[in-house]
Image (tube, rainbow, N blue to C red):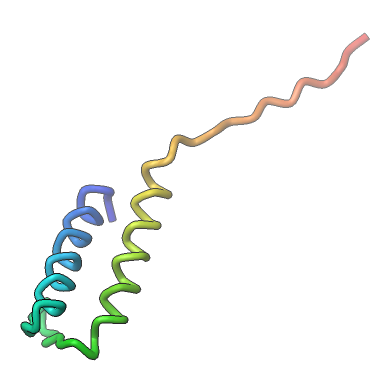
Length: 69
């Protein structure tokens, strides 16, 4: 998945969390989610945040110089 796709999913899961906290049920795809599903949603939010951070982080290259005579 791209960063943009992950960010879009993150927006959806955060909105779902907010609705559930307000006492509503939420449908994502074919899943009907309620307050007992809050831990799963929080876990998915953390996973998405981690994946976005990992994909957004700059990559580093290392060069090893060998001594010469």
